[in-house]
Image 1 (cartoon, rainbow, N blue to C red):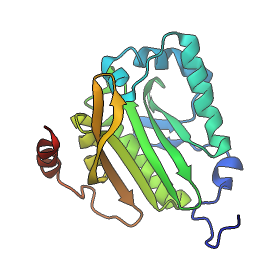
Image 2: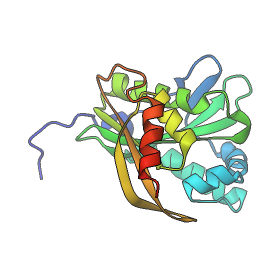
Image 3: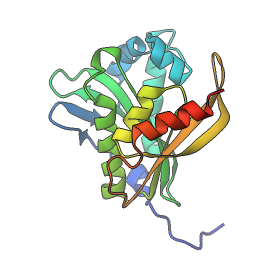
Length: 213
């Protein structure tokens, strides 16, 4: 059925062009995934925190190879955009950042990320998220980006706030984790937002306290 409103984002951004490499400061580079990254992805998913919040494990390097291939293919399909977050000096993978659930018509997508244990404490997640957000808004023209995480995942909440994703609400009992159903925080940024921290983290912490039983 034809749309009465033109698409906000041209699908050809994904289906008709190569995935860009995005710098995120002097020491971080976001690039497309390569098959050779699979061993580092496998190692990252041995981390209990990544397993907990992403609700999956990598049993073998071969399984990680399948993930990497899937992440790379998703770009040309216009379904997801996945970047390896790499150290600018060594080239090693230090994390992942992605746009998923891309809706070109409405100019919307959901952002997600993880960081390897050895790279934590360097603001890797917030810098990678900020770089992808700037690309999505300024280079491509997305209108809205959403970010969802468990109410109990305080580090992810801090990353969201630092990157300017304000808290919009709580999805009650929305996602099943290994220890049961979790309430989920919904954060978002809309193109044109100016403040880097639209909701102070202290306010979010108070909201979490009120929401917990």
